[in-house]
Length: 360
Ligand code: F6P
Image (tube, protein in one colour):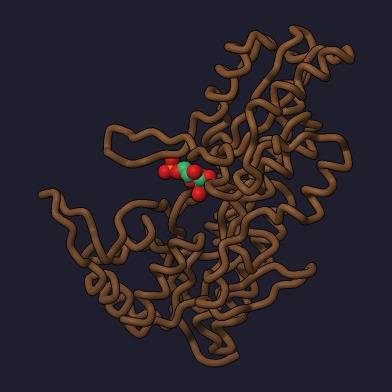
């Protein structure tokens, strides 16, 4: 079992359902099986940057009830790249050494970072520069970490989006309307294609398959002629036309955010006088709520496996889900591939086979 260890754990990037079950599994395995200490680091790398570091010693009793809790009890951030950290005077400064020192001052033997591809790249850079022993766990509702079939948070997001479609179906049929559901996913259409199939959408738009507004309108009119009085459209937030760009807006902080494509499509359907159309933007609802059973399961498997990697001294690896098993992969290899929807893959073929229109 090796000697005593003190390990840190942090959650980084956008939150999602399933993070607390991972923390729970890590604590149960590390403390319960190996008798180690676990320090929860608050607010991702900000907790290490603080002096003294902002940590929460975790034990199995504390985390036991976290299996069903959404979000992350440790807090997180998806801003503030440590290598170009925004200072209060408006300048950017490299704060990486402050974070690296936090790890060493805490006397950590290893750290488990839970994040998407962006967070993982940053954590690895810190680990390489600062001599950390890092193990990674993939989480993202976008499911775009290509090496793993599943990332924590994706299944819950798909469940929520599917339930939204189930609900929209009744009101669409009652009013003979086109209902558009805009879902998240960044530049990958995983949530849209999965929820669209599971929720019985008529049209699914994903960034990987550019759409034609002309063809969508023709399709809707064809269905109307054949007596279909309503339609459900699910669009990924980054869906776009062949020559168009994803719809974005700049918020008050000057950040560019995806979103608005649903309204754009609705306006065009209405302007052509095809059907009354309404839009639902699901937004952060997809990231909240209780983790689904599958997310709890994957989170538990990842948490246990990540601790076991530390016990074996196998660092700089990410745990992944492949063919019903946890497989560890070098982090650089794991984050080198952005995982989008395969336009010739099973889900796209399934959708087309069901007569779902993909806008192309
Ligand atoms: O990457 C997760 C995600 O939820 C994306 O699907 C979405 O585009 C983005 O984060 C939203 O980010 P924020 O929480 O900063 O608005």
